[in-house]
Length: 189
Image (cartoon, rainbow, N blue to C red; front, side):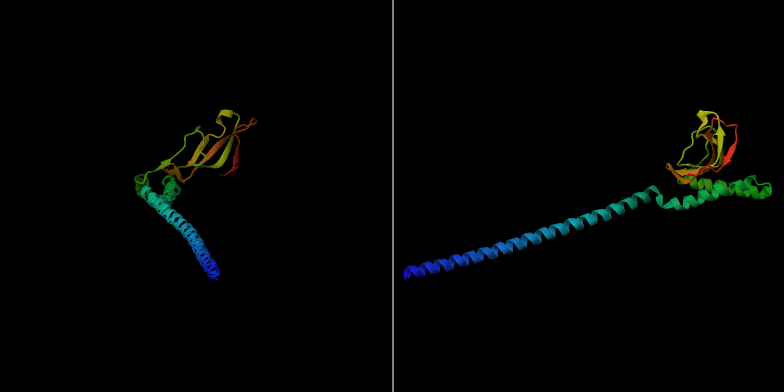
């Protein structure tokens, strides 16, 4: 009997140990799942923080380059280029023309202060697609003149290689049957 009670006690102890080990295993698995979940959340949080910091860094870099002034400079460039033709208008008095010239010079000074420049393509120069807009095409029998500037209609403005205001140009287009004829607004880019 004593042997039997020892066996029962031993079995009870083994069952107790097995139950305890099982609980420890369950707790260990639960802790592992919680740890994995916490690590995932931490990685997500770190990614969100990194992305936010990257956006802020890009914004600060743009501000340092003066990009916040680009919309204003585009508006100044448009006024400068669009209305400069008033200087050649015969109906404008000499005094008004002189005042306008001073105003346009001031606008150009503002543009140059922020590294923007007014440019005009020369005749025969290869057309720069990102800086120019085609107004007219001029047919030519000379293959070498194809896609070169025939005439600059209105200057453009660029800043750090980016267009603030496109130059309007007429462009030569190769045509074997050409006799110097013009075609209006064939293509606009």
